[in-house]
Image 1: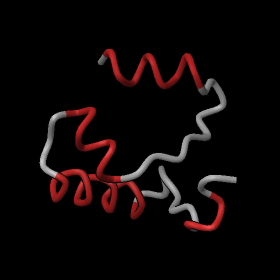
Image 2: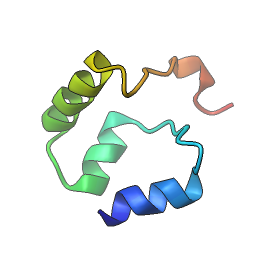
Image 3: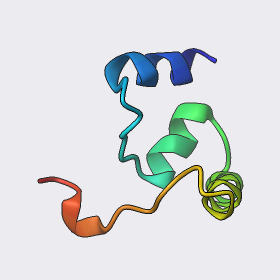
Image 4: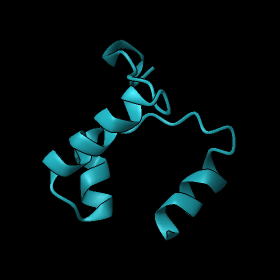
Length: 57
């Protein structure tokens, strides 16, 4: 997947903060599908939710 490779090249540590809406637009998927996928990854402890207060700092 080109998007995943590009993100990994920009953020090799894997620490990336991205909004659900932006991710949906990049992947050309419905936002509801992205939320469902992220919730599954959250349950599997493969992603973390970032507090909104750190975005933009």
